[in-house]
Amino acid sequence: MHTCASGPQGGFTSTRFVLVEPSHPGNVGAAARALKTMGFSRLVLVAPRLAHVQTDPEAIAMASGAEDVLASARIVPTIADALAGVTWSVALTARMREYGPPQLAPREAASEARQYAQGGDIAFVFGNERTGLSNEHVERCSALAHIPANPAYSSLNLAQAVQVLAYELRIAYLAAEASAAMGQAAEADELGSTRAPNDDIERMYVHLENALIALEFLDPANPKKLMSRLRRLFARSGLEREEVNIVRGIAKHILLKTHARDRSSPS
Image (cartoon, rainbow, N blue to C red; front, side, top):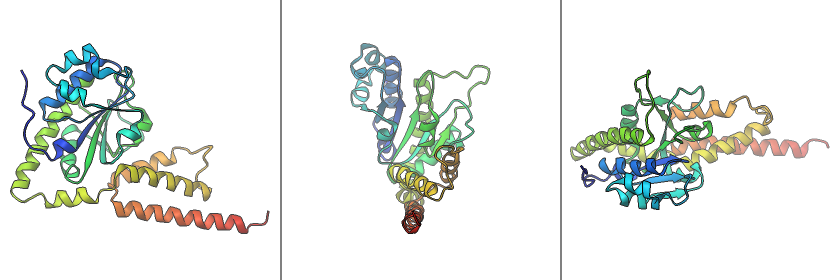
């Protein structure tokens, strides 16, 4: 049975589903099918094990009517490429993380998504079938989501996890469309338009880290998870463009002052 993918646009066209290093072509095809049944079409594959997974017979068979979504999937080499231009992103994780952004249930993540999707691209990031997402991947995202499955048997197939999130997003986006029709979407539009893009936030972290090293507050040889903690702090705040500019301005002046100090110090 195939579900029609026609319907509202909005978050349906601004939401990317990112699969990081998928191993099995069948899962990629099944994920494409999961997306199409819920009205989504933007699939991004980060360094898949099979470079030509879109034409793999198993992937095509599992797509089962969603071959168009599979064929149009974008393949990129890194998570940074997959998140380029994104204003908000969610990492799907099977376990609690000591470090990283705030953690949400799928329905909460979808509720947040309906706000940010009004102002630009957002992304939901899924890890490799065997190893999941690395800490580096998780820290690049704005939030975490965890599917509260049966603790006695919590193993979810990659495509099943994609289906759960795509369903929750569909419900949230349809509700957002109904609200917009009644003129209640102004607040969501404002929030989405002021949110800092992921690219800008990553550049801010690099700038800030360089400033902290220059101050000798951060020892690059023994960082003690300082940047991970700062990432978690900023992720909780939901950085806006102006706030990113302020942090980068502070970092810039720290670097200018420390460079001037170093030049004036006797050799």
